[in-house]
Length: 331
Ligand SMILES: Nc1ncnc2c1ncn2[C@@H]1O[C@H](COP(=O)(O)OP(=O)(O)OP(=O)(O)O)[C@@H](O)[C@H]1O
Image (cartoon, rainbow, N blue to C red; front, side, top):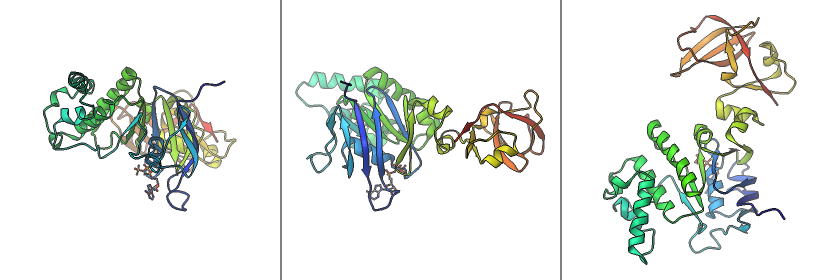
């Protein structure tokens, strides 16, 4: 007999109106224990709905969500909606803003053993680097600090699954990078399964062991970040994750690529400029500075595409360059 999957969605549909692009439809995915899973998709693709279905805040109209083989109960079947072995951190954090950080976290534990309650609360604050904020009121914290308090408050009850809705949406890049690393460490140190949703694909690529790509309420693909990125099964995935060039067969042929399928995809970093012998040349239409790299927009026989260049300053608008495309994916 095969083992029972940790978390399983079987053909789950939840639509809010008789409108095909609201909610999610026929979602089937398996989630393994102890992993970080990122659900990535544009605004309105159904990410929050998917989290709510897993947690039991909304019920599927058809299909099933199974946690360790048992159906997750919906809000109609539970006095306090939400699965007992899961916790969800939403974008509004759900904190008592006038209480101290320590009290927000410790209040989640019973008073049966006060010493244990104190020790566990302090340890959890240390794990999330907020020990020094224990006596501050939540109202006086920054967005990043509040996010950490919300995670600590959820984690103190030792859930098996931590669901996070856009955990980085209100943070600047520096704070975001530190919190990303901390979330990864949290999963490794505690063994909790983390499912987070983000509209920023970089979060998923950097953090997750499994990516789930949602589009218009449907899962279009899932897999490890490197597999999904390097061998996308859908052109949309390449556009979402890496601003891929997606060309029609005619456009591909115009720049010297062989096209057998109906679409040809290649990432800007798969294009090499002036490297090795090639008879293909293109006109540089524009150059955008990106820090360590520059994005170069090229035009060849009427087809426009983008390349990444690792030597900022080397190319200027109006120059002609030779190019090669190292790799393509066809659909
Ligand atoms: N309670 C609701 N009633 C009606 N429509 C809803 C409801 N909740 C979500 N929707 C619709 O379902 C679709 C998916 O919404 P959802 O919030 O799950 O997407 P999302 O990917 O999380 O979006 P965002 O990134 O903007 O938060 C949207 O078109 C949304 O308007």
